[in-house]
Length: 312
Image (cartoon, rainbow, N blue to C red; front, top):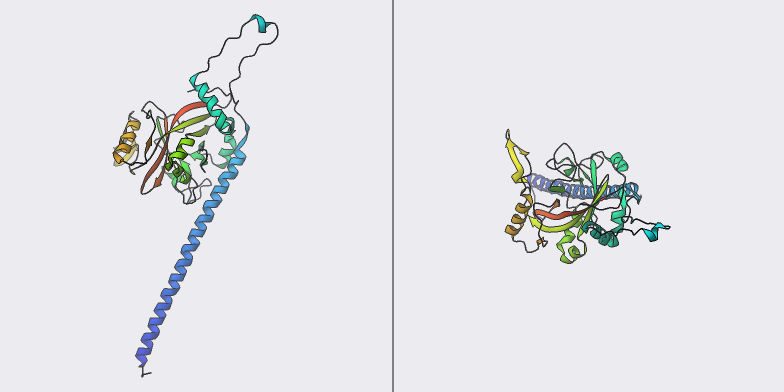
């Protein structure tokens, strides 16, 4: 081996030291990256477990009569006074048909006292059969607060299902948008992507939304990927340099259908007959493929929780 000067030795030692530092930083970075994802995964699983425990506490015994009670007559009057024949309404017939498949969704109602003990911002609860979607829906005075806040108000994922301030908590707006994250583990609105499969959609056409005195049934009428533009952007006006929701103009649904058709996505589903501006819609919105993924339900039935008589 040839002679090396002291300067050459120092230079090589310096290079080795730099390489060692880089290697150390890479190892620390990798450990930190893995640790972050482990913590995030743990936090998401913990949040999901909390939601499941909340459901167990909030949902109790049946609280809705399974079907409208028919009048009964006994004794002498039974033969002398004919009982008027009740002709079922369209809503009652739909209720009876749904009851055969979805009895657990139509007869058990959450205790909102328990839900409000968890978080006072809960104003509704949604269940989508054969998906993980089984969560409360929240609203907050700070726009998009629950995008990155959890039920206990801690920050970070998975957040909560929520509406923006353009919608009211009555759920009687003609067009209500509920937002939720598309979580990798399928929680929150992640499992909505099951509706990409036409066979799944055909077998799972309804979802259920609960409020304190009613159960609302929504029939799925639209499934599509759309641009990230806000679905209610035409209903906003600029005031003092800031965008502010003005009011519904009555053409929200027509504009949504137009945008879907202009998108030319072969996977898009629009029911026949298609929804109109006369319908009351709920849009379940999440992300996917750099776009918004929406599952839209049309309200077809409202069942009061104090009696099982359905109505519009």
